[in-house]
Length: 160
Image (cartoon, rainbow, N blue to C red; front, side, top):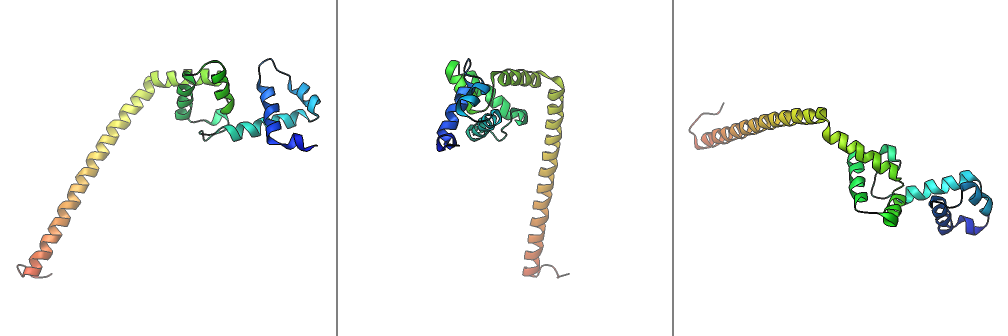
């Protein structure tokens, strides 16, 4: 294998040809440059993983809902070549974005999530009240101990 095939720029250019709509097939590119189909798929995966920055998961299946929502927002303002470039950089396809839009809509409109969220908010408020009550109790006990110590120092009460 010559050094041209090993260079990162060469691999990127081949992978770009693979991703172009209406371009050559993987088999045609494989025969043209003299590497196996699997090598080309490996190059594409490697380049997509290196380029996919800003998102923790490389596979679209592993993305968290918040990352999916952000991707939907990011892609909404783009069209044409700009959108295509953005999708390639993030290792996505337009079908991912469409599915994620539907997923976000269903989550936002799902009453079960709303009800669960409401219950969690109520529980959170109760826990915060309990924490505030305990904080006040601790502050009161601390001030009593300080007063007791001062009273001992002044000789107003006998030591235990």
